[in-house]
Image 1: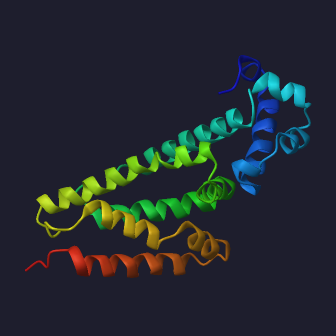
Image 2 (image 1 turned 30 degrees about the vertical axis):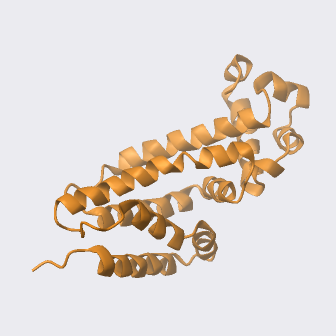
Length: 204
């Protein structure tokens, strides 16, 4: 995390350094990113950089925390999941929010995309944290099982994994960069339809 010398900088200078870091991490994976590019874009010396951060990993983690905090605030503003919504309704709502977020913060979305392509030790460890999100989504499916909406034998974790892999970040990013949001949402609807056919209990 930033050193106190960074925290004490004028706001405009802090924003310039962070903006340069965001630009760099949106262009290159962490394993290929360069402090030289960041300091050049920020208009500071390499020595000054090390007065603010201990290294590339330090500023990368700071940028990720900043993105996470901002996204969490946006999710909170959006409101909690609709009360009584099932797993598929909740997932679709989250996915739509993700697209809206990517539109508002394209560089942040690009950083997330490049994380998926990075096999460095640091990023691999960070990607492991996504297991928490999988577990939370699987928990929603388990609740649907208890409510008789999903077949008891369905493997909740596997269903979540299949859904996420079917909506691979690479393809979503490609479609999104072509401003083809309808294609993305159509793909989501078709995938959810297939999964529902297999695991959802037919009512009536």
